[in-house]
Length: 437
Ligand code: 4AD
Ligand code: MG
Picture 1 (spheres, rainbow, N blue to C red):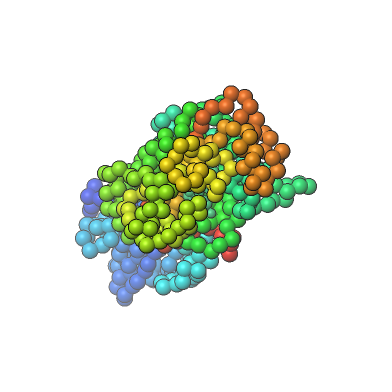
Picture 2 (picture 1 turned 90 degrees about the horizontal axis):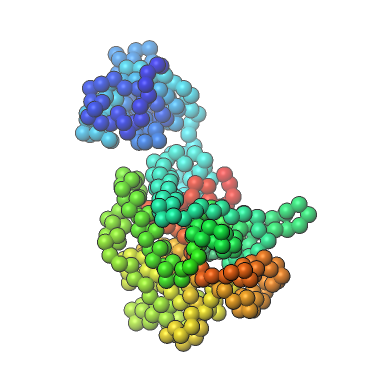
């Protein structure tokens, strides 16, 4: 069928009202009577109801009636305003070309989440996944624009690495020719090398962690958006992180309102959070809040667990940044904050927690510049110090104060889209129990 094909979104406009248009896509739903066939056509931009009568498409009426969901078709017809139709317009078909008649689609209504995830290669066509993936694209695009507009360079790290960054227990081992190596847990150690050349850098790249627990917030493969900058302290990094997340929210609210509505994501809650300052509290203050407001006693020195983060965040409606966690439970590279008002040594570090039970979306810190304390901390973690010799070199040649953080892209998307499970924030999730499809 020859003609200039338009997107479903494009033809649903007053400009096309009463005009002939060509559209193409997949059959989302179909029903028919003796005289009419109704096809809801789906393309990447939306859905439109298309109506054909036996009179208007005499040769094709019976073929159209038999078409199964997900068949690909090209349609020609006249656009007509109709307030009852989704999108406000209908297409009155005058021509139909079957591109590929689908077999019976395995996904029907009311299937379990596990079934849908087993069929993610097909479920990815759903309106829900379509909306999530559009938000995801806006989120990563906004991360790039945020940093580029501020003069940061994109710096991409290696994925195969000989080192742990966040502790050996979650490393994935990979056979590497005749030896064993790991998949990256964070770009950080390489970013710390690169700031001596580029000063301000960022990236969005895949990250791997062998997370042995089944939770709704952990993936084995996820995307982390990280930044690292010379000449800044961790509190400067906190401000950048807040600005970055606000920038991303602003973009999504601008570009994805329909997607958020379709997902039932309550975009108002996001918009409201843009108008206010986001709290920054210390770990010690967080324990006080847990004790006073949540009736929860956490021993000073223990890392916050999921349940404690959740209860803490019940007191807030915007993201909260918790700073100065106990040095003891922090990764080796986080330096001590001298003179802090706390019962024990704390680190120059922070986590940003999202409200609504979405947990830690960002983790960051200043980086220790002292070779002695870095070595001691590595030994405490059971790492071989020689293995980190190249990293320690960064403290030998013109070391400067620097800080950075990593944002969990799927955690952020789960919060923005109000998803029950982080597995839906990524097209093909990898977890303890899932590596297919
Ligand atoms: O807090 P994390 O472990 O921090 C780092 O890796 C630092 N080296 C980053 C840096 O300073 N450049 O991880 C950062 C964020 C977490 O806050 C969380 O949002 C996300 O990454 N994250 C995960 N997301 C999904 N699945 C997992 N298994 C995750 N582990 C961490
Ligand atoms: Mg963390």
